Image 1 (cartoon, rainbow, N blue to C red):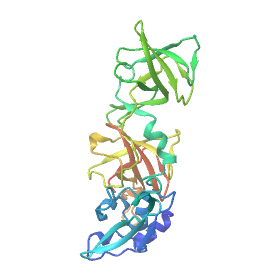
Image 2 (tube, rainbow, N blue to C red):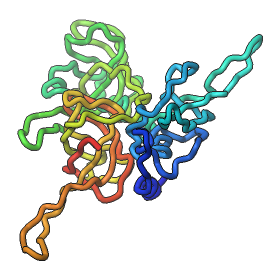
Image 3 (cartoon, one colour):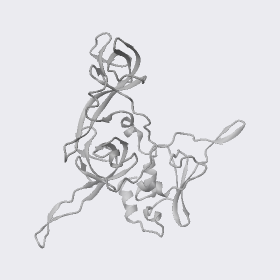
Image 4 (cartoon, helix red, strand yellow):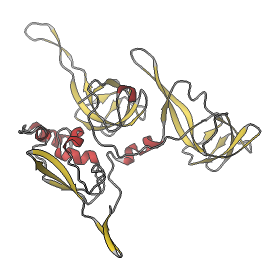
Length: 337
């Protein structure tokens, strides 16, 4: 669905008697059959002018453990309960197993956002505190003296904190992000370059086998515990109302931001953000001259697009730009929609 089509349906929407009705698109379907390739955001935007209000109009189905896990073949229907618009999901997929039949999803649940775009950032780079990488265990040398290492190479690591875990992520220091007002360090990017499986310890060193190397690994690269419990089953949601941040960077190092770009913002869990929160990307209003009085007037800020947070650290977050109606750039403010 194009942004133009989404906007037109919402500009024409009229407020009904129920609160939920006011967020429905004027051209919403009565039902929608989920197909492979859909995302939760796509489906939400078919029905709602404000897709982040998705959880507020869901009707719990006692036969479905988690109504936000939606599968290809499911039928999403708009119904009215006590005059209030609600979305329900019908799941009629049956696999016949002897001696009885039981309902079972035929495919994996659809993701909230396209995994082809956000997948590398769910299990890859991390944001760590200043000094954390410097204090982490590091690779010293390969067993046969090679400078660069790749998959299945045996390498020695040094660091007393290599205890209790059988595998680690291998990281290299990337960019340092600072608060643009205070210059305080918000976090340091730990760039994922591979994984390491612990073999044994010998004379104060730890022997590890490198696995899943995404680039050549070298002496001095650091070992950190792998992130745990990251998945894509979050749902679109409204953020805290007092969010007031900005885009610090767009992945790939460019300054201009467009739809489906991954960006880094200067707010995280400390500010109350969580995965699934949707934020407006704002454009500062221009300073213009009043044609009558000649005074300078600051025009109001206007929304340029929407982004959804999908991975949250203490003071930084990754987000995906899900809608765009004008040019955006690094430094643009983000706020509750």
